Structures are given as C-alpha cells and as structure tokens.
Length: 89
Image (tube, rainbow, N blue to C red; front, side):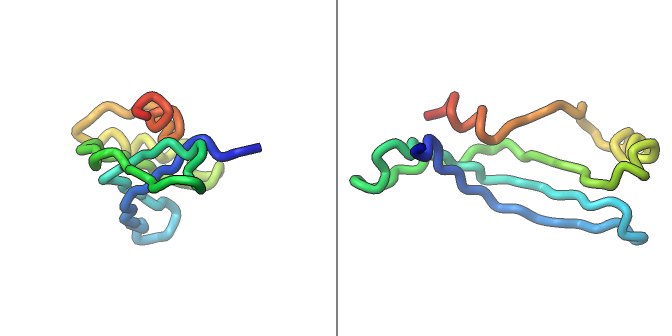
C-alpha cells in the first residue's frame, strides 16, 4: 500500500457550555499528490477558501443537533476532504 494524498488544514474547536456538542471549523485546505512524494519535493495546492464546519456529538444527542444546525446561515451537506483532494490533484 502507498499513500495517495497529502492534505493539510487549520482546525478550530468550540465546545458547547454543557459539553454535549463540539464544533470544528476547518479552513485553508491544501492538497498534494502523495504518489512518489518520498522521492521529490511536495508541492501543495494553494489554500482553498472553503470552510468546513462539523458538529460532533454522541448518539444520545442526535435528536437535538437540529436546534444548532438550524441556526447556521448555510445549508448542511456531506463533505469529504479526501474526495475533494483527489479531485483537486
């Protein structure tokens, strides 16, 4: 097996007052082709302007997460940093 993708990003965390929910915000995503990277210099892509917001919680709080996400000024969708990186490189 050999790595196929290198990704790098900045992450910020926020925790709800009661600790039930954790919000992560990832930005400045950069990607590089990892195939053969050990034999050459790695050239990362320019940082993306996209922000990835994730709400993390235990299964016991799944029914309450909409209270948080309904306040976001954007639509929630699935996103894979791996898939985005493979498409970019």
